[in-house]
Length: 479
Image 1: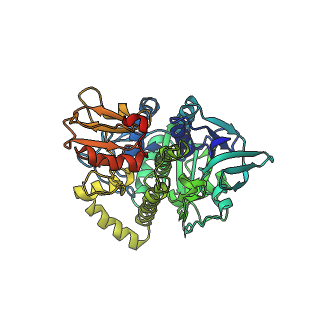
Image 2: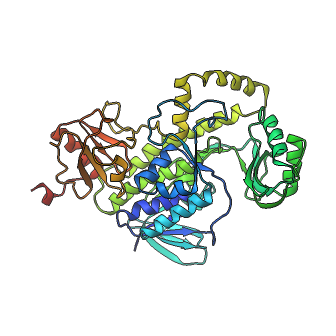
Image 3: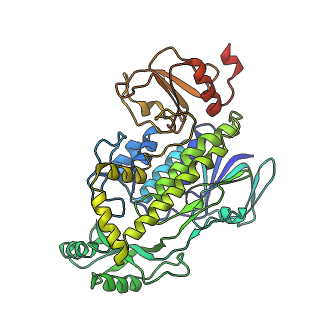
C-alpha cells in the first residue's frame, strides 16, 4: 500500500511530496496534465516562501533562475518604500516565473524519491478506517493510507468529499496572457504609466524580443473561466482601457481570472486532506496564492509523516487545519480589501487616497508587508512568550547559520546553555549547542517548519513541548 497519494502536481503537491519523502514516507503524485503547463500565473516568491526554500537547501537553485527585487508596492500597488528592519534574512521578493518554480520543486521531490505519474485524472475516491482508494479516470484503483487534494480551485477531491466552499463569487474579471507587441517599448511604457495612475488592473510588462505579459480588465464576468479568452477579446479590452491594442499578436498563452474569495469549511475529512487552492481561492493581488499553498504543504508534511511513522501525538494532524485555516481566511480578507482599493469607482478611490497617506507610517507599512509576505504569522502553541508560535529567521551561529541545520526536516533544539537534552527524542529532534548574538533567549525548540514551540532553559519545562509536538519519548533513548 502507498502511504500518501497526492492529487495535483503543482507547487503545493510537490512541496508536500518532498516533505513526506524526508521522512521516508512512500508518496505517489497524480497529475492530470500530461505535460507541465507553460502558463505563468505566479511571478515570484515572498520572504516566507524564500525562507522555506532556504530551510530545505533549495534557495541557491531558485536564486540562479530568479531576480531579487525590493519589497514595495505589493499591497494594492500602493506606493511605499521597503520597511526598515524586517524580521527576515531575506528582505526581498524573488522574481521567478511559475514554470521554473514548478520544475525546481518537481525535481526536488523526485530526487528525494517521490513517484510522479502524469496524465492521471482522479474520478472518484472511497475511504474506510484503514485507508483511501483513489479511482482514476481510466478505471484503475489505487490504495493509500492517506490522500491529499492539491488539485486547484476546482478541486475534484474537494467536490468528491462534499466539502462546502462558501464565499463571494467573482464580481470582476481580468485577462492575462503573453503575446507579441508591435508598438515601440518606450511608447508602451508611456501609455501604461498613464493608465496605471488610475487603473491598477492594467499592465504590459516586457519579457524580451517584443513579447509582453499583458494584464487588462475584462468586459464583465464570464460564466466559465476555464475557457480561455481570444486574442480579439484582448484587443477589444486594450482599446477600451488604453485607447490602443498595441498591435498585439502571436499569443503564447491566454487566460482569465476573477476575484472570487472562497474557503473550504474543512481541510480534513477522515484520511483525506485539502491544501493550496483546493482549500482556498482568492484574487491574485499581492502575489500570495502560490506562496500560501507552499506554506500549507510545509505545515502539513511533517505532521502527516509523524502520523504515518507512528510518532504523532494526539491532535497533531488536526493542528494543520486549526493553524492554516485562519491564515487563509486572513489572506481572503486582505486580497478582497486590495481589490476594493484597486477599483476605479469614486468611493474606493477616496479610500485609496487615505490609505496612501497611512502607508507612509512605518508601522502601517510593516504590518501590511508582514501580511503579504507571511512573516507575521503566529500560531497558537501555548504560552505567553512573544517568540512562541513565530518562525525564527535565519540567524548566524558560532559556526555557520541556523537554516543550514534544518535541511533534513527534523525538529531542532538550539541550546545556548549547553545544559539541555533531547533524550528520548533524538530520533526526531536535533540538539545543537551553539550561540548567536541575534538570539536573546537561552534556548528555543523549533518544529520542523521552523516555528518556535518552546523558549527557556529548564529541562523539566522542555519535556512537555517535546512530547506535544514530537510524541512520546523512545524508552531506549531514555536509558
